[in-house]
Length: 147
Image (cartoon, rainbow, N blue to C red; front, side):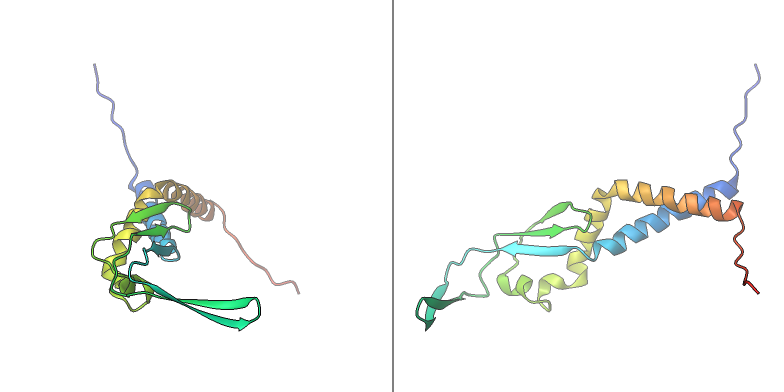
């Protein structure tokens, strides 16, 4: 009995690999448009009420920025939510964009985790990129100027 040989053309594997890689990069970039949210308990907070006019008052809350947060969440543009380990994060770390939480080395892991959980979009984008590649390879598009 003779063994059959399966031949795989490298010219097909290369676009498949590149389409998957481009899809992963695209989803990872889109993840950067997600939003971080957090919640904290106002332990040492105090409130100050100021009456602006009869029946209308303004309330200002003061809290200690060094209080720990209760939870944090990353919401992806694709709709999934990732709980963030609150660790030692304080209100000042997450409230302001220059806080320690927003160092890229801290938040990139949530972008990567979200990219991994959005695997179906990677597959879909890979298929789309492959279709575009094979369409462009099969058909030549010429734009002519009417005279």
